[in-house]
Image 1 (cartoon, rainbow, N blue to C red):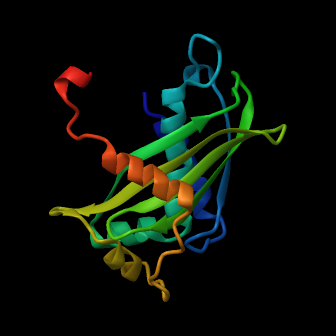
Image 2 (cartoon, rainbow, N blue to C red):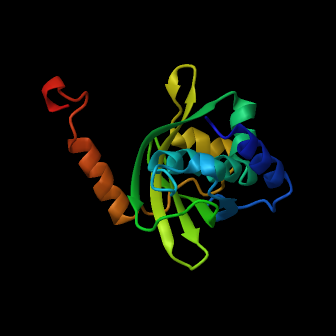
Length: 181
């Protein structure tokens, strides 16, 4: 089940958080609960993706994007993600989540997120390709950035590893062939 209560609590806490610039890192603290685990008593890989919402949506609140999206009557959707898992997060273990916007292209925003253990080890790392949408489809990022009131509307340089991920995504067939599944 989706963590509605945790999301509500996160958004409520973010109301009083200091406002952040568009590229600042937003830090939240969490705990791995029994309903987040798999049969190995650790944070489930699919649940990790769901829990990343608990950092991404409040980030959009503290950097002003959520208010802008509501005002424009737009939506926010995910168009891709790449994740690297490296350390286990066990039941009841606390962890810190870090979320930030890293760059954009003409259609998508790229959001980097990571979960950190108390030991200082990074447990996992994800980059999301996100799109702002309206009733006709994807809103061009130039229009999104303008609506956010940013003076400099040029994206920071895309990290090479993100560009290589996108290159691999471009080479991937879509839709997948039935024989390939």
